[in-house]
Length: 107
Image 1 (cartoon, rainbow, N blue to C red):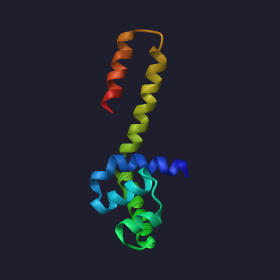
Image 2: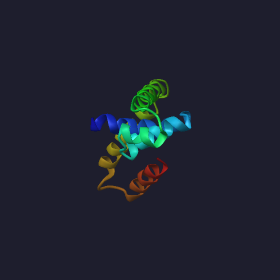
Image 3: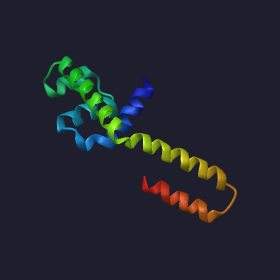
């Protein structure tokens, strides 16, 4: 479950601009603020089932965006490359380490 939550948080970060305000609100409350379905339904005066359905549809949309755009996948690949670079230069040239740090700041 933690793995799914982490993945959804990343997908939400990458694709939230493509969601409606209602979808963003539900996802923020559920995944980022750890509200329960019942708590969200009380805030928006809708049924718990309506919140559940909206979150599941939004999760599916985020996964579809990722299948097409691969932003999260590319992000993970960049992280792996940076880790490999760091290993190679850990005890070597400080100038290269400085460039790696600058690259990290860009993400």
